[in-house]
Amino acid sequence: MKKNKDVSKQPYATVEYTDQLGHKVIALENFQGIAIKKNVYLPNETETEVLWYTSEHDPQTGIETKATYYKPDGTIDHVDDYNQDPQKDYYRDIIHDKDKNMYIIVEMNLKTNQKIKETHCSADGTIETINDYENNLLTKKTYYADDGTISFSKQYFYDNNNDLIKTIFQDDEGDVLDIINHQKPSPQQKESSK
Image (cartoon, rainbow, N blue to C red; front, side):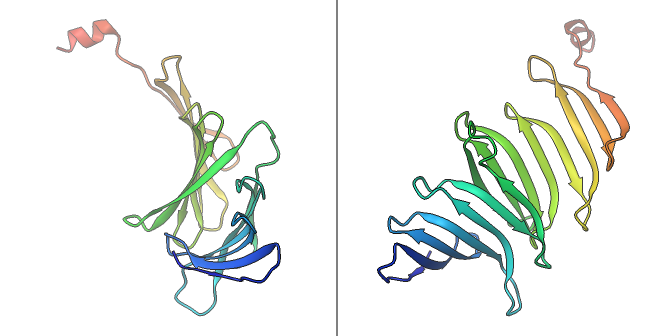
């Protein structure tokens, strides 16, 4: 990862580099080399760069505090503000799945080391699905149409042993489309099937 650093004597420096996923990144770093703000651009075949998201970071720790995501046309898609709940510290990792030509953004709670959210995006940055988690269990999966609206969602419910017991399908307005009850076979049913 090659960085071109502005070496002027200002307390902040602009750094431009290509990250491990091939994204162009322009970052504002403090004198300790901690990024305060980043602009991340999607790879593009044309001369015009497509801004994917900007992120703001705590100057002391470098932990991301806010991220603004953009649609390919430049309008804001959504904003994640991690300062809304001071009890939670979040960590985000971006994974490039080359086989599916998509990106997976994984958000973790640093205090509990548990997954909170996974956002699956196509190569152009369009959100395809968002998976919400509680206690590392998938609790909701939301599917999005190409225009960014919700297509439908699934909610998952578990018993005390973390076994899936129910799935509820909902349309874009939250109306229930279907309910599937997942029943585990009892020990007697397991024995009789042998």
